[in-house]
Length: 132
Image 1: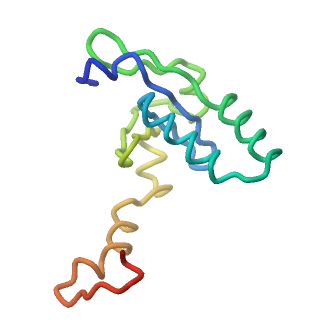
Image 2: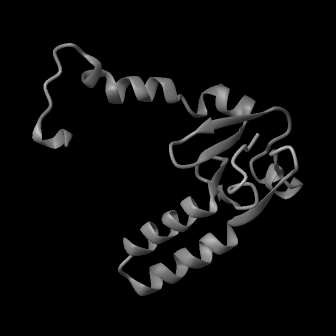
């Protein structure tokens, strides 16, 4: 449930067709996401296509009185959510997956995290200039 009353009415959903999940942002984080993506896009035509793509693939989501995010059928169909959903935190946003798809090996966040951070958690780890 969404407990922060300031965030309850302000969720944006981006349909992520690459991974097959929904990315859910607060309005504030969604604005940062758009700004960062457009700032990095120097080509005017590509920036226009990016705006169009974000507009076509994002939706405002409603939050009910209990703080639950309501997923319209259209969004459930886009990610093939037919059974149980799984919510996965991703720092500044969270993802909604079909549990079977997520657990079926499409995403193995634990293995990736362990391989990406394994050296840093070693007692012998020494940071380099590239780590900062």
